[in-house]
Length: 119
Image (tube, rainbow, N blue to C red; front, side, top):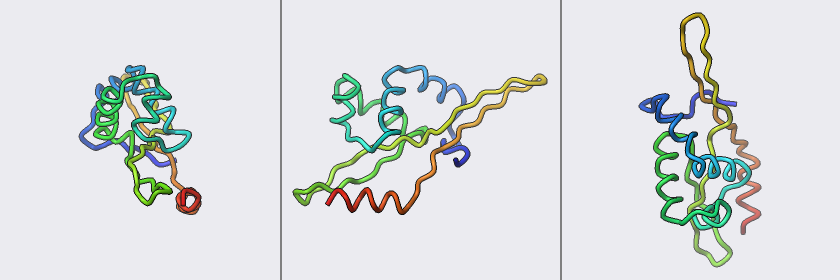
């Protein structure tokens, strides 16, 4: 795992606020399994597409989600989203509060195989 995928401008309250949102958590969980489009996320999370886009924007701005392009069989392509969050940890010890966010590793070979399979 890689440490701290979150944007350097992102503070603890932003991350906790996002993780406190049930729909944002659903998006992170769903996109940790496979890349999904906003429409697919809307169906899977049972939330309107406009609500999905609002959360996608916030998650991406915080560095917890990434956009990718998925080619389609008809020659067009669509935007899909992938969770970058692998682990969130909050520690309070000896009078200090520390927090870390660890990202997920991306295996380039696996990604190329996945993309090739979409053709």
